[in-house]
Image 1 (cartoon, rainbow, N blue to C red):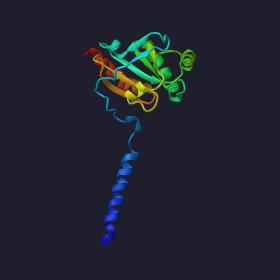
Image 2: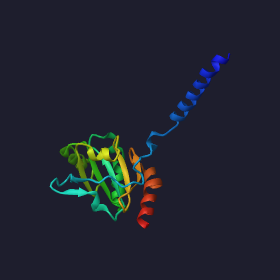
Image 3: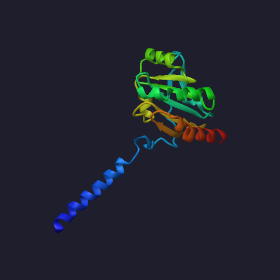
Image 4: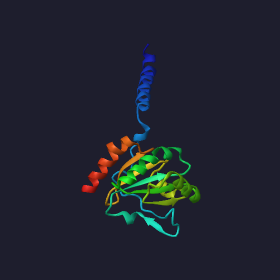
Length: 175
């Protein structure tokens, strides 16, 4: 009888850990970059390839960095939310076009609308990797000092915008 207690105990512990793991929300994976300086980059602009945009240009401003691609199905889901946000002028939204072709990205924005104050090209995905992007879309809230304060994994929804992102943006803008 005693020889069955150890395997039974191990089995019960494994079942408990499996149950806990299955109950977690994969969209709430904490980013190791939260409350750390945003990775610095300088990339060519999507619309004007001869001009660059750098993170240093945004120091002193609260802004969103939205990682998107023309091939991303979920990006279409969040796009109307971003268009509404851009029209509200609450916070500037900058786009990081991730592992995409310039022509495809420009055509996509022409077809669906352009919510971005400006988009940059990350064709090789290097900057996305620096930001810890493992799937698009992802959106970062960056404060006046250039520190990442929030990361939205997956599409920005109206609920995420109203309950998490905009309250944080307003708080950061007032400080």
